[in-house]
Image (cartoon, rainbow, N blue to C red; front, side):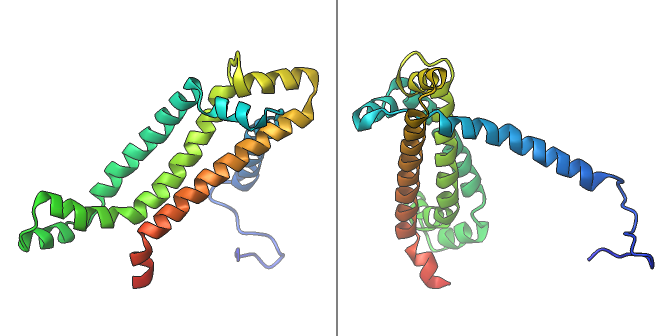
Length: 191
């Protein structure tokens, strides 16, 4: 609780006006993010499952997925391996562990919990990239249908596309989460 003077006034801040400026900044940044997201939800269009699958497996979508997901995953893997405690590696080498055994029994189990978070974050980045790639300059596919639906006011189609994207992203997130829960079940049993 903030200290106050006898008259109910708050103690002066080291940075006058910081709270107000932070409030305005967060409000405007939220609007900058939320308005385009709301527009995307409103720009959904009817595609059907086959049309949606064609868009999801299209070359532009797959390129965006590869770029965002694999880049994020590579950076997270390098970071996770760097965070393995050296004492684990030293102990394994003391007992005569070879390179393959060291990676299989020490490094891989040590990085799995950190990779769980990294994969889930990379999936979020990948889906954001897919939406961006589809929406910008689309001549066909999901982005074209969104732009077409926006131009002619087909809000029901735009909402359906957004719903399908959210559903597909949620399923991929759930599957990745279940996979890592299964791989990391040993760590939950130890705690």
